[in-house]
Amino acid sequence: MDMLRTRVAQRTRRVTLTVLAAAATVALTAGAASAAEVEVLHYWTSGGEAKSAQVLKQMLEKKGDTWKDFAVAGGGGENAMTALKTRVISGNPPAAAQIKGPAIQQWGDEGVLVSIDDVAHADNWDKVLPTQISSIMKYKGQYVAAPVNVHRVNWLWINADALKKVNAQPPATWDDFFKTADALQKAGITPVAIGGQSWQEAETFETVALGVGGAAFYKKAFVQLDPATLKSPTMIKALETFKKIKPYTDKGQTGRDWNMATGMVIAGKAAMQFMGDWAKGEFTVANKTPGQDYLCVPGPGTQDAYTFNVDSFAFFKVKSAEVEKGQKDLAGLLMSPEFQEIFNLNKGSIPVRQGMDLAKFDECAKKSAADFKNAQVKGTLVPSWAHDMVIKPAVEGAFYDVIGEYWNSDSETAQQAADKLAAASKTN
Ligand code: BGC
Image (tube, rainbow, N blue to C red):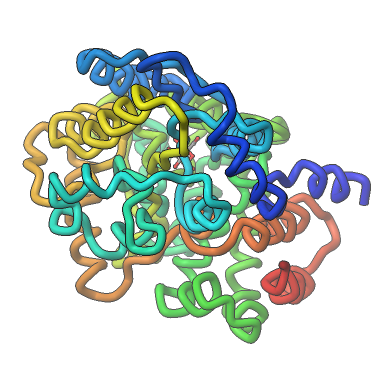
């Protein structure tokens, strides 16, 4: 119970934003940042992420603006969101912040975001972005945020040597997966690397649920939040399959950062990790080659589906005209083909800007782009709920708690967890 309370206390995502209404006005009158200095809040601090952020900084400075780094460590961005709230409440928001999904609308409701519509129209963003994504970037019809990438979440990363040692193929089904996991364990290799942080547990469960239930089930459960689906027999099966993975993970997972877990796979200490393709940024920094040193395959049973996670920067109202100009420079840069290429080569994701040449990208990125299109056609392209793309932050936080408690409990049943999910879907 104490753990639950701590988690709840730490659950920054569910802090209601309504108190911020007054801050909008304060933001306008508070001391603005010094001339042409663009302060950017982000949470890209792992090896691959930091390299990607560096690209952004360098390209912005080439435009004559100064980058003021506001990096807040913590995978998945929970710490960054707390820092952002504090700054906006005190009337001193950064010029831009890495926020995504429904949170953009919530900040829009607070009246603290600024339109970048002129930049978006000049570059025809409506044409070069899939509508599913451009609509997330707009508040009341106007662009207030710029997207930088498409991350695929439903990946399984595999150390190629580890798989060879047990003479196995990348698992396509859950049966194969558990057979391979058994063989790896017998060979003395930790089958699955994970970090014991609620977003990592939630993300793993998200992929399992998609694999077990399929895209239609996923949409009913995690997009429509249908209570009957949330406690259906399929959900129970998904929860059981998720928990079946636990004995294949190691004891040292508590609090481990995601990139440390990726590091275990890179070093061959663990064989597999369920993680979005920011993990590829770590393999890239370690000079590893896909198809040779490591493999990227969709999570078992998710071959035809695609969970998308789009990073974006929203722009806050500031008082200085120079900073406003800097914001527009940044917005234009984020969507430019040059930036989209070099940034995504480092980040592990693919450009969100459509029609780009992917010649320089590796096989994982090319597969991601092809599978994205295929899923769009088949209706199996789904937003990642564990990565802030669809449900409101309060419900997402409540789901995190349910999944985390179930993963860490020795006694909770899948039925109990499913009932809790259905109840959590009604969180305000
Ligand atoms: C973000 C990624 C980031 C990852 C780990 C995700 O929510 O979309 O950009 O690399 O978290 O921090």
